[in-house]
Image (tube, rainbow, N blue to C red; front, side, top):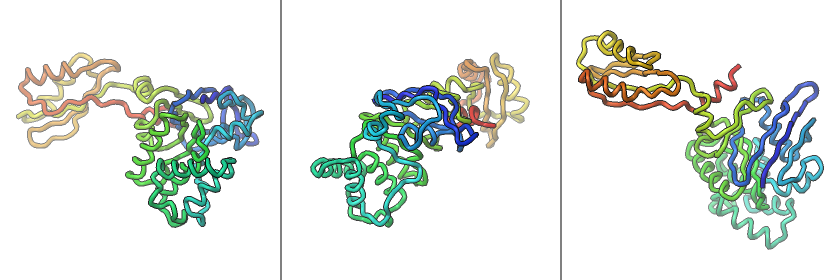
Amino acid sequence: MAITVRNLTKFYGHEKAVSDISFDVKTGEILGFLGPNGAGKTTTMKIITCYMPPSSGTVEVDGCSVADRSLEVRRKIGYLPEMNPLYLDMNVIEYLEYAARLHGLDAARTKQQLTQMIEVCGLKDVRHKDIGEMSKGFRQRVGLAQAMIHDPEVLILDEPTSGLDPNQIVEIRNLIKQLGRAKTVVLSTHILSEVQATCDRVIIINDGTIVADGTPSELQQKFHGSESVNLELKAAVSNAMTDIFPKIRALPGVESVEYGSVDGEIHRFSVFSARGVDIREALFKLAVSEKWVLLEMSQKATSLEEVFHKLTQA
């Protein structure tokens, strides 16, 4: 069940929210759709889910156009908006039965799907509880169950972990990864560590245009700057800035060195080299020759947060 977006543009009056973007989402792929507030993420998701029409361009879900065959598209999609639309005076079972009826499920299919969603979303212990009495984490679970009650092939999740505590985030993350084995998932979030842990691929959108598209590791590799090594040494020197610092700085390939901290004879440095240059072997040999005790040497990877900041900062 693939999603195809081609030359999608959306105006709100004279304001362009999305500007000529194109991308595909493959069957069984979990796509992280990222961007700062106002970048066009939610607008794009609303167009894919037929909540609003595009100004121009095309969107297809499994070959069905959102413009010409919107009812078919809606049957294929489960949608969890950022503002989870729940009826707080209903209990979990009542609400999910209501959602199933809206999707046209018969009584037998409703019972089957209800049992499955209660199990998959971890709602068994609260299934008879009013939604208004539940925590934000359980409400998000109910929202996910609502989105999946008709067994859609595509899930569109807008900020599914918003407002959750760390334990709840891990639970929802694991649920999304489980769902991604059988469904196509597009999720938007501001928690970039979640994207790294959950998503197969990432699209970053800024000011309505796509500025990056690739796996988390590909983006980290493509947009990283200098290589960085964290170094911790034990050395009986009188002054690290004169006895250690210049020797590290003089190594071939080293661009800069930052002295971090000192704790007795323990000295910490951050050593930067040109992109693609691995200086760990040279640092090891230097430590051996100078009889420094090498306590730690770790290469720092560029985080997805750094990539996001680099691509979206004003």
